[in-house]
Image (cartoon, rainbow over all chains, first blue to last red; front, side, top):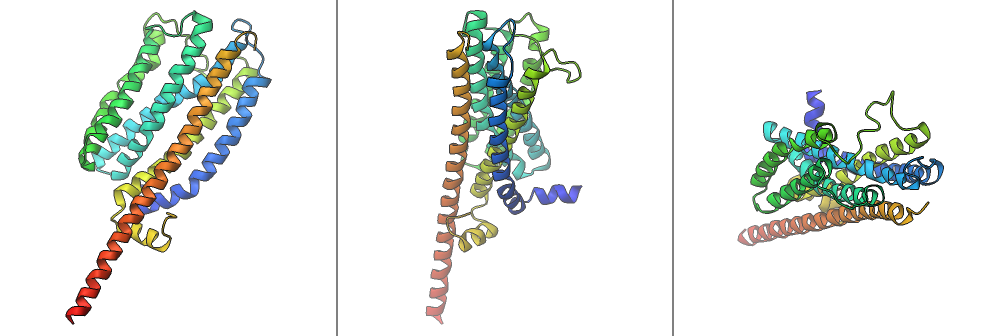
Length: 249
Length: 59
């Protein structure tokens, strides 16, 4: 187990593996997203209360899920980087941040597009919306903090600390609809054995959540490869790789 | 879309724009890093060949 972990943490090994897996993840996610979108827009029946407007959940839920899941991954990898001083873990955290921020923006925008017809307003300072907005600011803060350091080691440490501290916002986002009186609806698929959503509506949602996770995996691997190259461009293995195939990587 | 078309299509539009943005941004970022690393490799090779020439000249 430790051998495998150490081998994976070696930049050349990770770079090679990521190069193999990323196209497969990307294409499989795009196919699943196409099927899930068709299921959500065409096959799923309209909701008896929200009508056709409910279809927004097929993009809102996966993006909200990604926004928090990516942050959790960022905090875990930053923690690993800080504790065991594994540079690759910091590289993964740094690569995940812009993807997480982009899906947080989508989560907020699609939530606003759902809120206008259902609540009569695009924005309300509701606990769930506010904590999600704070998550976006934490992502921006993390990226700005990293960018403010020229020394990559200092950027890793400062960014890693912020990512670990910021994880306190995740339970607040998750439980905000339970702890406080909220406009936002409660969880519909909290328990897979008894979800409060019909199976016809549920399968495209689950498929889109799985597909967007694969999509995130693909983009993360692309970005992490770039981050590894940036950090290791003076290393022998990068020079050997690029010396043999200039421009290809 | 039962009167919700602008909201539903708007939400799906935002979602797809985000995905396309992520693909393009990741590819551009990777290409930029490869170019930077290639330049560093070329500089290193140039430095090494210059050193070798200097050593030969000394001999």
